[in-house]
Image (tube, rainbow, N blue to C red):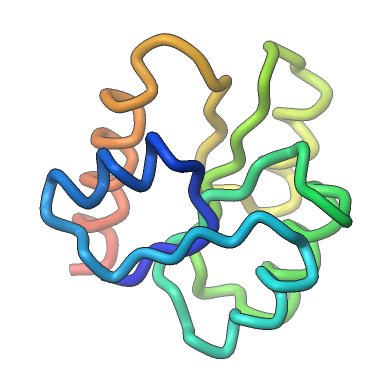
Length: 115
């Protein structure tokens, strides 16, 4: 399973549970430029360097609708969550405690969906 655009701790966690094809991409243009690699999952942060996370989400889902997007943001905000879900995010995560458990659960759900 290919996973792109994750933070360092999420990267480490995914690697530790056996997902090895992981790329960390912190800038919007580089994320978009690497979509040709056809990742299964993109962990997309709302606070993306050189771009707006919601706009990137919309672009990815328009261009590559088969990619699962997990949208991550730093504080509880129903407006952001609702926009992300409306624009195609598979799941949203408020970054903080229990991130690993949330990520594990989401990856398991996506894996079941793909299989």
